[in-house]
Image 1 (spheres, rainbow, N blue to C red):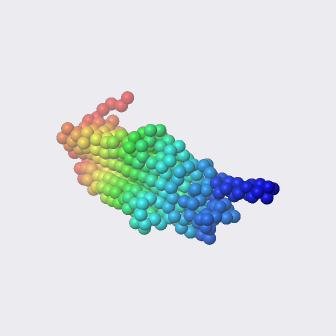
Image 2: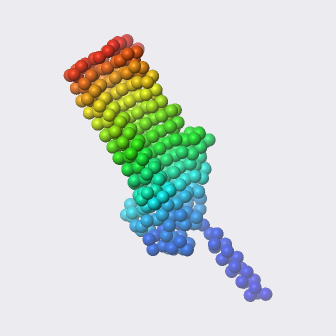
Image 3: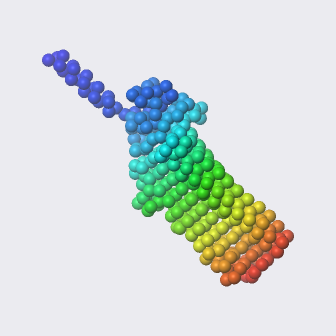
Length: 362
């Protein structure tokens, strides 16, 4: 009887060990997915390590390797030290999927390189917080980072010190419902094939970043989208740098250069303060019933218009330097441009075309 009792106890312990989870799991080039995924006994792939990690735990990288796509179904931190190259190179689908609600996820120092896959990071998790820190996301045929779920609560995505390049859309915010907030710091979006950042019914706060070489627009705010951008550069876009298309954009201390139009508004609103629009086709332009405010800014060396209100659009201008453009201040048809009369408009091929109304300040 004693022997039977010992055998049962051993069996129970073995069974319980099969369900044991780690607060800290690990992956390594020399690991095995039949391992326990502890630091002394690492796994080979992120997806196996995820299944063996407690909610709120972490997965750490112990060596340079490719670790495969994975889905996040709990709060977790996936971390590679700077000394290691922790990569994913999917040929189809999505590299990282975050779909479980009410989670906090940290992704740090990973390299996502598409070999035909559609999406780098897909976020559909409601009421969640996602931190993307020091990631490189390269060559996805769809979106580098997309947040497209239904968010009855509020989902927040924090992106910093990262590079997103060669995707169709760099960052794509298009919630089906609810509130999506994106925060971007010290990040470069380079040579994406549509927009660097596309927003629909979502919110963006961006600082100290660059959007360069987008085939269509650098930053586009569509219906009900709101973007606040400070100390950033949008350059070499095939069409528009900052583009409010039914949405709202506020820009300060920023540069738009070598775009078809630096700042463009159609049916939305844009406010620019202490900005520079230079060497574009047009500097600042509002049309299609939009409104635009430009203050303490510079429009210079643009091929066409420095600041323009095209029928039907409304512009409010004060304290600007408008020099060396084709037309400095340009107003057409029923469009309106109101000025405090304190703009420096000199050295353009035509300084003013159309009617600029001078109004008193309050």
